[in-house]
Length: 120
Image 1 (cartoon, rainbow, N blue to C red):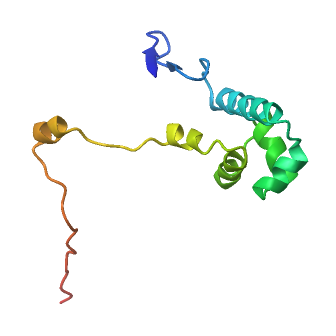
Image 2 (cartoon, rainbow, N blue to C red):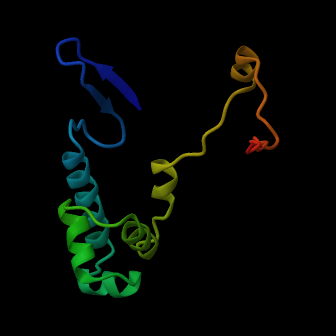
Image 3 (cartoon, helix red, strand yellow):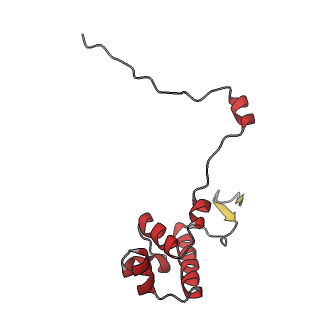
């Protein structure tokens, strides 16, 4: 994904798998449109998808229209459409390269120690 920053407004726009979108609302609408396309490609109606996913019909309608829904509903719908792999691109595994660790010179603590305070 490529981020471009405009000098005038300081707003970041992204170019990647989804078209350029400047607001959360636009991203939700694009995701909803992709879910709808996938559902239609698989020749499943909204009611059948809702039943297969274990969510309400309104949850499917809200997801497809970009009005939002709970993350739980999104996960269930993606699994019902056999596209749970989309979740990996939404939340990829975060890792730190060995070079970054050397630059910062800090090691991750193995455990967090509690501070004890004495009440006197």
